[in-house]
Length: 404
Image (cartoon, rainbow, N blue to C red; front, side):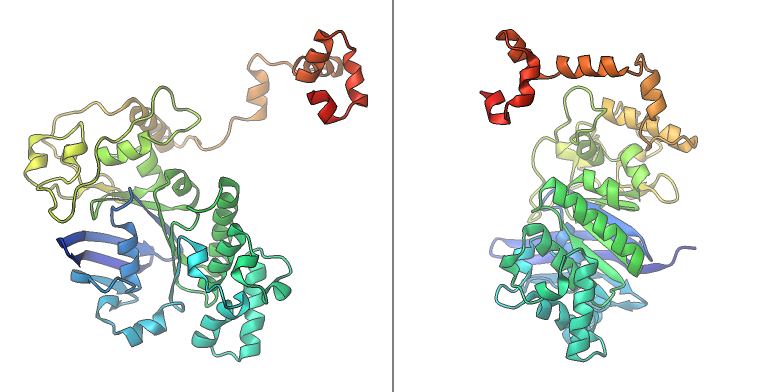
């Protein structure tokens, strides 16, 4: 049996504002297993960040914990004092924040910032801590780590700063690493590098990761399990394949349908409306007013969690035995077919083989064919020929001359 490292039960958190009490988290339940990555996804304002910040008790002063438990290694974190939490933060549970520039102190050298938690939590001297800091900096892919320990945050690129934040979080080999949208501010290329880095580091230090994001494309690459949040509740939870290829909640249908893939045909699905105001949460299913599949009961009574499989559950009345059959969107039906193939043991994740591509009405080109093909696809050659010039003249011309 997989060992659980974290259990969150019936977590309820509100915020006292000038307009009234905002019920931000409304009965959240989930768990984290040792060595796995759990992704929590949902629109902005769904309660993802508040949920994970509560694990480290890093909530705003106007936050009110109304109930629930966060059990870490047999003890309830919500009952711990600030002094007790200082021994946990950074050592047992660490966090990577969304914006590295606001996470790093701009007037302190990064070597000192990485060494600080090591000195605080590990039995090391200052010189040993700095040696360890240099090793971690090198581990996260910063070249010339020892020399760059003396640099300030502004002397690094955005991607490098995020690597430094990861280095600080991993300095004490935490048992749980919380990543709160760590790639949102980065371009796609750097984003892929950071995700690959986190996967490699997870294997090396055997940590468990909670990954917060609104980008489902990121989830597919990093997560083992996925929890979908909406209006302060988890509305669906399951393995990556179950959420991506066998989603049951209409909100999950909307999220997946709005995500383009290479196989997407026609228009993408958009979710109408906006999330509800949690100053006055709606009666029944919070997603009902935005759903094309809402039934009368959805506006009267909140649905319970229905088990789809042992590892998959969803909070929707559509799973009730007496619910009418509905016709999901075309993209979801396409994914259901893929899920059936997965269940049958077929490998739907691998790319089409080279031999298959060659066999599909393609023949291997000879050298002469390749030369003719390259010329036919060469806009410069076509333009030169159109002006009466020999296409071979391009070899004596520079790129700027060709452009003209």
